[in-house]
Length: 300
Image (cartoon, rainbow, N blue to C red):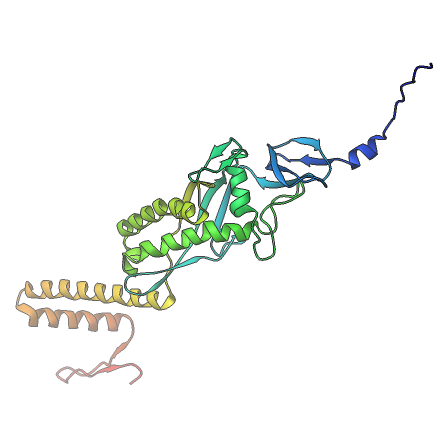
């Protein structure tokens, strides 16, 4: 009986690669790996950190999220993520607030069990993706499905939902404790308001998102801005205060002037006449001795 000969089958490398799925993260990305072949359901497999490349089974897929520090800026500056936020004060005036929230996405893949008892083998990153990251945001997704292409088209919408809305609520809630002049013109009150807003934002982000998916490392708030109408009112008020202070000082000097207020007024009048003559606003006509002096203001 003849022994069977072993048969070697060589599969071209190109065909082998075509039958596999691949993951390729750049230095700014992390990825979640899910299987999903023709004969299996989609389940989480593992994570890939930055700068990783690997091949897996056909039909497997990957979602990519950013790693490292990010920022969300609300201002009129070029490149800002959104326009300045608004806040109403206790005297029902609207302020415009610019600022920046600096944060990082929690990309930990260490297995966890959440408060409901559900296990997440892919840690906080898997939970983030399957609870809020993988949602549809105005027809777009926050993640990308191809490595090296940055965030998904819906990333900004996700940040607006959780980062912007939390900052907006904190700014508004704390502004209601103050009048507009206090936040605009009182450094101590403005500083306290800023501290309270900064303290409130991280908790509100967690409340909106549902867990500690974002770590806030810094919050910068600019001085609140007010409408031009309020600026004009403030200017007029400050001018009135200055006039009142000058009048009070003038009154004090007059009361202590030798000869009393009447003598002081005569002195001030003489100063005004002398200045008008020096400025050429009053013309002095030469007259014979013993004749009454005639003072004629120019232009009359």
